[in-house]
Amino acid sequence: MSVCLSLGEYFFICSMPASWLRPSFSIGSWPTHTHKHTHAIKTIICIIGCVSLCLSQDRQYVGFATLPNQVHRKSVKKGFDFTLMVAGESGLGKSTLVNSLFLTDLYKDRKLLNAEERISQTVEITKHTVDIEEKGVKLKLTIVDTPGFGDAVNNNECWKPITDYIDQQFEQYFRDESGLNRKNILDNRVHCCLYFIPPFGHGLRPVDVEFMKALHEKVNIIPLIAKADCLTPNEIKKFKDRVRDEIEKFGIKVYQFPECDSDEDEEFKQLDKQLKECTPFAVIGSNTVVEARGQRVRGRLYPWGIVEVENETHCDFVKLRNMLIRSHMHDLKDVTCDVHYENYRAQCIQEMTRESDEYFILICASWCVSFCGSKLTQDNRMDSPIPILPLPTPDVETERLIKMKDEELKRMQEMLEKMQQQIHEKDQ
Image (tube, rainbow, N blue to C red; front, top):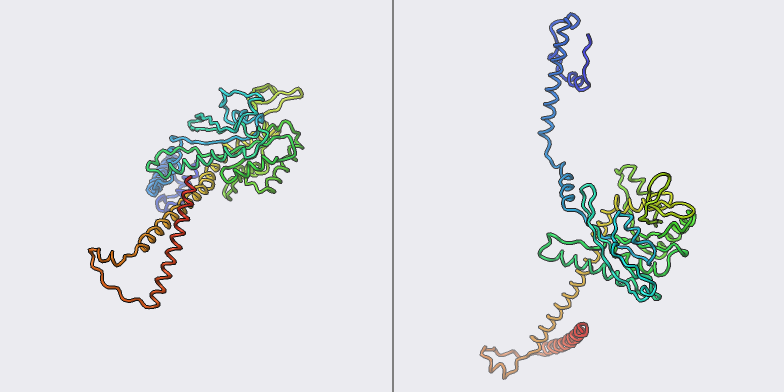
């Protein structure tokens, strides 16, 4: 009869010494039950060898391969935070797009202003925070809205409150980071800014250029073409090309996708390539569920048909969501921390160093003037309890040096008075 062995048994038996299984007589003369016994012995020896091999490998296992699991467990337990800023004119669908991205309603108590109220409205900063949980992962999402931006007749420096807000968050984080208790620091820094470009027109407007140039050194800017259902596919393509050319022409630094590593899988490389080719994203938002082809989808119903939000042939909403949430959210936070915040931190340290140097020079100059300018007269030396030895008669060279020192002291005193006056004017 034939004896069937598994692949593992075969390789293990082949590696065994021949003397272990060499019988004293030929296998062909064995009876049938001897073949069965031989198969059982071979199986037992194979199992023992496999167990021995596993134990040998276990002795070589240290355990640091579980570090990613430890980091994952700790991160999931702590949760994540992300701050997203939306900026653009009123009526471009900013609130609707945010609700569509995160499948939540962040503007329940929102009050729509009429035209007269919007005229007198100034740029404000409003925050909406919501805790989202998906498959055990917690995300604290903060949406920073900028109502009133670009709605005035004169939009000169309408971005100033926005840049001030970003700097305030950097300053607060810098203070917390430099304090004594750094255990639970709240990160309210703006990690990403979605800037909505109106689809009406022929590219970027002056206010769009000035806004992005004012913010591109402080935050990751992702330009979006709002209400893309107003344009045909050919118009969208031309509009994207024009916006890309103007961004390069005016030197605007929008968020740059990181280059893929050579060991990345092909699916991620293909996704990254599509995202780079797709910018600026042409998006549509909708909180309404409609019936399309027998399915309920989020979209917008028109007399001529239905525009589906999550249909990639209709708009870039899915690509934006994949980039913003599924693939590049952590990179947006890294760029904020390692680039934008570090630039702000370096400027703060340089400013503090410069002020401390000026203060040190001021103190030294004041000390030199007060110490070197007070000359003891003969009467003072007589009244002084400290015995003073008679000074040698100075020669011509010594007198010249003393005169030079006196002139230098006068110049330092004048410089000190000027610095004190400048500091006094600055304080006022």
